[in-house]
Amino acid sequence: MSNTPIHIRSGRKEDIPAVFALVQELALFEKAPHEVDNTVERMLEDGFSENPVFGFLVAELNGVVVGISLYYFRYSTWKGKRLYLEDIIITEEHRSKGIGKLLFKATMDTAKELNCNGMSWQVLDWNTPAIEFYKKFNANFDQGWINCSLSGEQLGVKV
Image 1 (cartoon, rainbow, N blue to C red):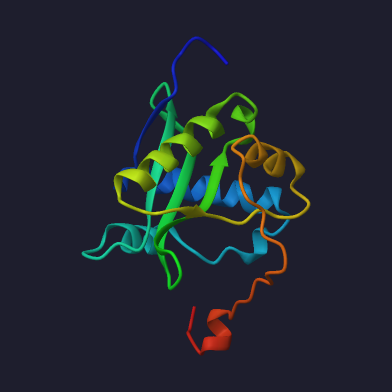
Image 2 (image 1 turned 90 degrees about the vertical axis):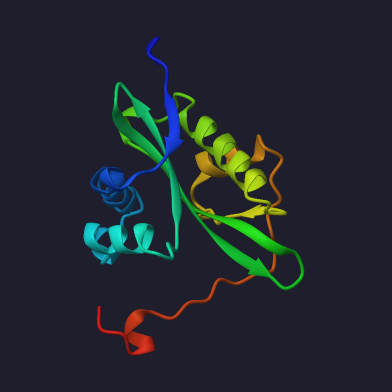
């Protein structure tokens, strides 16, 4: 990485187009660009309405967003308030330069600052670099849990 420092900060409305571009880049990496039906407009509404449903941090290099950590809160009947890390995304050009580590640590700090008693996330079983990254933080990897979901269509929601 160059000598220019990475700046980590809370996300703002004007960051959403760059955030959405990173989401699209991640979808390409995961070979699923056809599955993205979110929009910049929806992210603006969901992230900056009276009751936002997510928060995010950005990593900037020379004033350009090169990475994000997007999170929201979940509630565990066993554990209480938890921060759920939806995604850490670093633009391909800036991967393997320590930016993910900075964002992950900043997300951990955010969880502490917001009185969460833990943090959780998912990682694809084939994403070996990400798994190895999380092992460096001594993360726990659950066994025996099966992810379940319903699409908007299955819920009867028009997307």
